[in-house]
Image 1 (tube, each protein chain N blue to C red):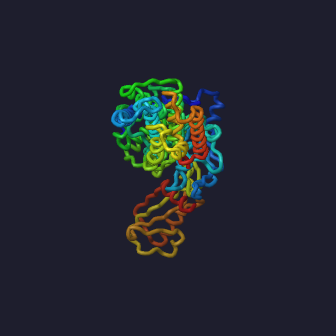
Image 2 (image 1 turned 90 degrees about the vertical axis):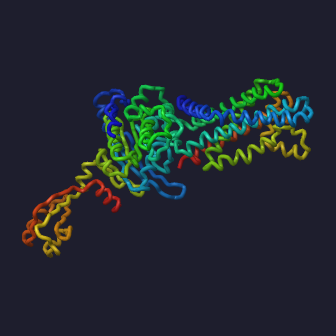
Image 3 (image 1 turned 45 degrees about the vertical axis):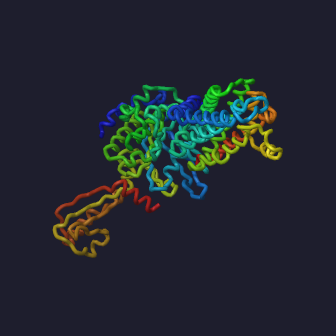
Length: 253
Length: 337
């Protein structure tokens, strides 16, 4: 394995984060804080507890997931799209590095950034609401699994996109709505039965439910189903990436 | 501008040489091909055949110039050898390693300077060159990076962001990136496109320095004089096919024509019938007579021409001869292929 190449890509991508600190870290933290102010303090004060947890506390896992999902996709898709856009991808393709190692470098960096961001938001949330994490190891496991899975998804989008519009399209039109409708700000038990059934078709529901369980032991669906669904999405992403590199889709002529 | 490349003479001291080997083996290695392309074809999804059954061997340590008009298949050929494009058919060996089944070993021998200036605009020169070295699996070696940057006169720009550099400097950054991992083969795809004459000559010095250090160089160029100046061998590609591969001097001897120009004492309006066999051309309003002849022909025809001119009463004050350039040869080849 070409460890040095993985390290080079990883550090190159991480360096981009520090160079764009405002955009990469500060901006998501500010917007999440605003969510706490609006939903937690202003609206939340008028909402009673959800399954024994105050509303402000209840939305913390959902808000972290919201940022982790969107930032994983944004980081990974931009990470691989930008070399394609500038043409520097030639160097990656001509280097003695396997496809697996390329993915490890880019997705590893994107997931690392998201995990750091998730932990910063968690710390920020602690300033607004009292927090107690029942299963910290599971919390970290869900965080890492989600960050990796959606970074893989972002990598696929970055390969697929042949313009900045397409790069934004999936995150804006698909991921953000699914995240908002995936129980970030409510329990799907609060929905009418028909909509609850529809909500179960949304894969984000399972991520947020499992993540919330690791905090408060309350979940919309069973934890094993949450893990299973996340792993299934991870495998689908891996298969798609394997196919991309096998065929050279949008990378090699 | 030549001062920019004053460090290039030192290049031979830092490129990695193959480990010392017994004389016979070394001679054998020198004579062997470092790149071997066999029956290589490339058909794009649109059905366009960019390469048609290309066979080519590049000798270790030579400077090989690949000439061809736009769209001839030069960049496609390089892209396949370097791993950027997939071949449709055929096989390529680099240093004896198959580029597909043994791609790690094959690619680690190659440095590529692409035609376009693809750079990370917001990275520093030092960071981007170091990144390239890491990408090729080499351990950190600040001394080597320093030598490369100094040889390319980029040392004082090492902390500058690439976006702030001029086009010529960016081109040198691309070369520095390609040399960062001490390759044995360097591909230069149109290395001096858009570069001013002085800078171009400076780059030629760099390339010569690299060759002296044992690096095999394959360059594509539109500038015929560049191939004429630099190359040991020349390959001409047209419409996806290798039209010719030849030693440069042999090529110029074999295909080169000479031109005899006679400056006449008195202007001539028309040539007599007795001179029609020479296919002469009257120029300068009849003041100059031009005769093209083949240097490799059994007879040049000059002696009989001069005799026939005297018999026809046409006298001249002066004469000169010129050899056709590689450009003339190239244009002829492409036109007839």
